[in-house]
Length: 400
Image (tube, rainbow, N blue to C red):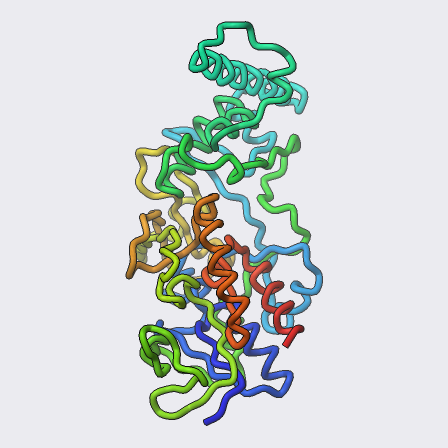
């Protein structure tokens, strides 16, 4: 068979690309090394509950075109993401809002919260500057100009500057260190350049006007997008195509003689190029899922974050709450961040200065590869939300 595109990966980017190209009259073949479509948004029905197999996925967007697009293929419920944070035996609402501040400090008004955060932030910045002075052998008093012009050198300093010590120590530090596998003092400040503070009693995590969960699960969304497109699962790209020295032979052809005009690649861009410039860093995840047939409500919320560094998982997901208690019994998943090594499943990129610089070099290789299109979190090495993946795919399709 002769195909216009070989789409490597049946995740969200691949699904959108396949749908758009089929609509444009192009012939596509989608392959995926997993035994299912949907990539990381895949949901599997168990005990009449749609289980998010690869962690919680809550769709949200401010992009009206993207919202209109996904609504062609799924009906969304009105689920609103309102996670809970657990620190020791204390419970807090996220994102940081008046419910959070009231619980933490026993206060009621926005003015009280702003005063406490402002005071703690100023104190933290003063202490950081004092330490910098001591290291430099400078024992002069900290000036107001230094405080107002303060620039954080790492994530820990940034978090303390933005949130003050109470919020940072209880709700940011441990969770972030688990997620990234590094001390906050070793992480770049830009990761939390901003923290969402809301001085109202509102637990809605997202500011976007559109959010929800596809009724029936994300797999149905992927199936609708891929209707009319040939899909082959359990198919490894590196074994499927004819290769020489780890690179696909040009023109592209499979071992059985299928030919392809272009490749759409949603895997790791550094792996595509045989790591010739070096290996990019990623973070991996491990999921521990437990069926509880005799319990209808384990934790009372879909997502509960555990912010202590000593608790090994970052959160527990209770899947039935994404669709308002459908099914009997309940299913929970503990999510463990993990160091990625070659051969592991990569879930998101480490977008620090070193890795972004290496990725820029791979981008230069990609620019010269006119018959290869890179997409998704791994192909474009970006920490995309779902709507951003769709937006990127639609934009690239418009250029074809």
